[in-house]
Length: 226
Image 1 (tube, one colour):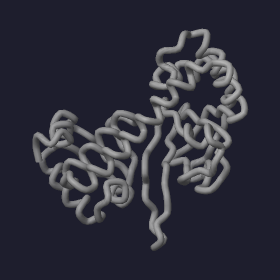
Image 2 (cartoon, helix red, strand yellow; image 1 turned 135 degrees about the vertical axis):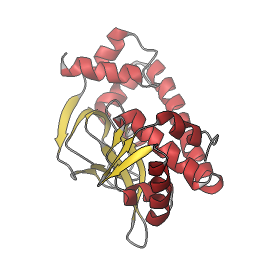
Image 3 (cartoon, one colour; image 1 turned 90 degrees about the vertical axis):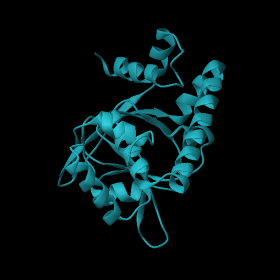
């Protein structure tokens, strides 16, 4: 399968482009090029000009921001098939967070000028993009609700389930990173993970978590089990 055909498949899986015909997807995919990143390499920093829309072909991208005390807050993990950079590529304003490769990564890149030119010619795509941005706002509202109202086991289970959906049963993430992601101290995260390990829900290794019982973990994420 060609690079452009792979990008067309990823576009088809995304709500922004899902209802477009195959010919239209191929035209959009034809505007892209690819970019390679090493593990730990930064794609862009907060404040950089928003010049492109990205799709993950392989690897992992961490979306992060810094706190005033120097700590890092992970806002999202992105894996193969995920698109990101929609806001900045539309308004051309500065990036609102940092993006760093969590492992060797290859990206599809759709430049702002090429994408906007296509939107002018195809307003249907623009309408779908508005819907996707609204979906992102809802997602952020849900994360805020989780951090305020949901107990740690539920927040932690939801994050692990989301990571598993992108990366499979072997999740490469440290307990410290996971703690930042769910807004909890590493010690609290470790206690909960150790409890789940004893229950056979998961297994712990250095820098990675093996998910063994997704049914139980999903039940916790739905607040049906603690």
